[in-house]
Length: 89
Image (cartoon, rainbow, N blue to C red; front, top):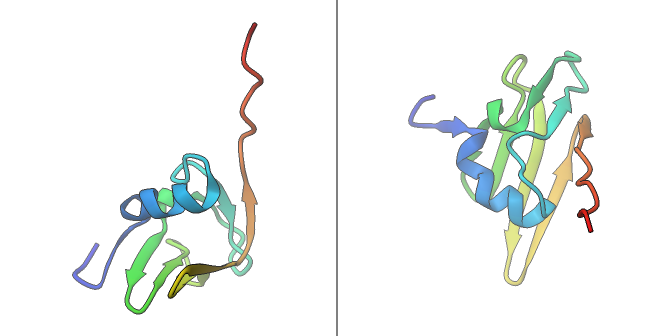
């Protein structure tokens, strides 16, 4: 990590709000290098919005932009979410 970025764990709250699930464990397969890494391992760059980049090749993973009352998210690559199991009765 540097002054310019932090790891994806730093964006856990924002991503959790967007996804409705624990985001740092979501596994992403990069569209460029094919590496599979959890979002928590990705580099998060903050500016006018937030950009997450592949920790292996640096290609785009997620771009998050903020407007007045909305959030725009662009996803790159393939994502694997664990499905919650139905509650036991």
